[in-house]
Amino acid sequence: MNIANKTVLITGANRGIGRALVSEALRRGAERVYAGVRGGLEIADPRVTPLTLDVTNAMQIARATEQVGSLDVLVNNAGIALYEDLSNPALIEQHLAVNLYGPLNVTRAFLPLLRRSQGAVVNNLSVVALAPVPVIPGYSISKAAALNMTQALRALLAGQSVSVHAVFLGPIDTDMNRGFDIPKAPTEVAARGIFDGLERGEEDIFPDPMSQSIAQAWRAGAAKALERQFAAFVPQSVAAA
Image 1: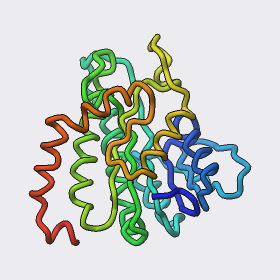
Image 2 (image 1 turned 180 degrees about the horizontal axis):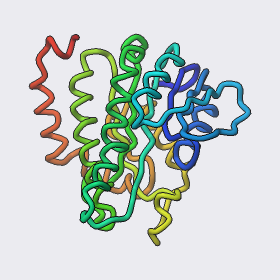
Image 3 (image 1 turned 120 degrees about the vertical axis):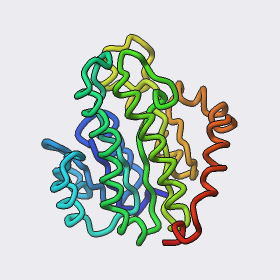
């Protein structure tokens, strides 16, 4: 999946990794970049089309599908991370609404276009999908669920020529990670790593130095082996639908 001359939709595109992904897609020669934002977006490049897109808003998702004529790559990047201690169920539900149901519903809405282009879905996850950070447990739970959803979509869509990619982000220098006093990779590094992995056809993308340190162990581990085994349960009639 080469980004040059392709049409890309990026959710959560107004700042952080999303904004860096927009810039990186343009640098790689994307023909059109749809930037899903909840507020304004100031990018002068005529190849960028802002879309008002709150991933928890069904009406906005439906309206976005009407504005996008064709699509090669969907990057589900929008997300939230709130500090909490599992004492407030509403915060867990809020994380799940944005970080799990958001990408699932956006993906389902744009699947007809992605099937037509034999395109790709890229879900920005986190290394906390593999092990929780206890001070952001709701976020960790939602990313673990989103990983499972990504793996299921990968198996279900494999026979429909739509590839599904999981991005395991380590600590990135964004507002979301401001409270962590640890080494963080620049957003530009993360964006380059994500598109590099996509262009190499990697199912699981480890785009930054911290995440790359666990990439080999993940790919050779029991969890990945089980994913491949369980994917065989998908009926051929579903895979070819």
